[in-house]
Image (cartoon, rainbow, N blue to C red):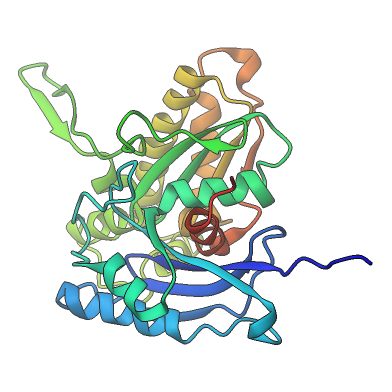
Amino acid sequence: MTSTMKPSYAIGVDVGATKIAAAWVELSTGQLGPVLRIPTRRDAPGEEIVADIISLALAIELPDNPDSALLLGVGVAVPELVDLHGTIRSQWNFPLPHLLDRLEAALSVPARAESDVRVAALAEARFGAGRDCDNFVYFSLGSGMSYTLCLNGKPYSGSHGFAIHFASSELAVPAQDRSALVAAIPEDYASGLGMVRLWQERGGFPLAQGIHTLEALAAQGNACAQNVIADAAGMGGRLIAQIVNMLDPEKIILGGGLGCSTGTYRTGLETEIRAHIWEQSCTNIPLVMAGLDENAGVIGAALAAAPPG
């Protein structure tokens, strides 16, 4: 008599700067259930954002007969620093007070938080564009910018869990007349939010759909839009090339709204990356979009909620 193992599921919740997405995920295959999405009320009190996350997670229904499925936990991907113990250690975007305790009480299963870029890299390593290589670097390019190195299918967390930065630190270069140093944070110019701010600072009108409108204007020949995108791609591309120069990875995987875009920004970004890789033989490094697209965060959050072993 052959016994059939029950499928194992976890709920993945991806909390972003603009939206929150959630779904069930079958852990052995990465199969994704219907994805529910709501806007992130990033200006609301943290307690209300937590309430939104819980309501969305409670709305997820496991497939077919729930009695035949095993729900192992709920994972939450957040755009914050998360330490090795799963504790959220920053509030750059918004506070999430008592998130895990409240999730566990509401769903009666273990809850775990993890940095969004790390779970997306985990999902790509397990089921996406990183399945066929020993090491790769995953870059999340969207409202913000972050990265994760993956070695043998496992995201590298660092000694404390904070190895996700590549564009958040202040850099300084000499002014044109060499009289002083000029400091800037690359993310303030090269991210999606940074590009919108840069457009407005250069006299641009409000963008109805953010970067989508900026890309459309650039395609129509708007010189200011083209320059903003070129500057952002130039800054981001140089930084990514520097990571390649430092780590010598097998592959680059780009995720996030900007990373998975196909317009002027993406073309400029790839040109800048390849132009600033030092070793000529490495300039043809595979540069691919995330295989799981915007679902990587949800799938990875679920995987992080129920790690193997």
